[in-house]
Image (cartoon, rainbow, N blue to C red; front, side, top):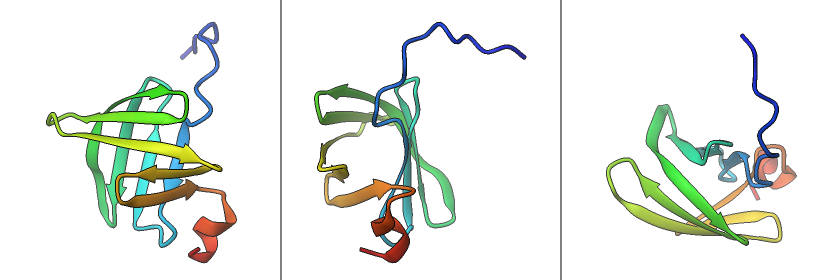
Length: 94
């Protein structure tokens, strides 16, 4: 299987974001899709997202919409606070 490496670099917010307790895990994929797991429920929410500056607009596959903002490396998604998966806050339960 070959991969097309001619596409532009992914947005810097691409990757896994998690709540401090690890219960919610939201992966922002390079194709502008997201996949959010909650507890043991994989793909609890899926949909698309667009980024404008540090603002993210989400559209769930069911049509539900939400927003988020990245401030100081932390994703504030509606009432959630998510950290990069490898961030020390995510590992130690901020």
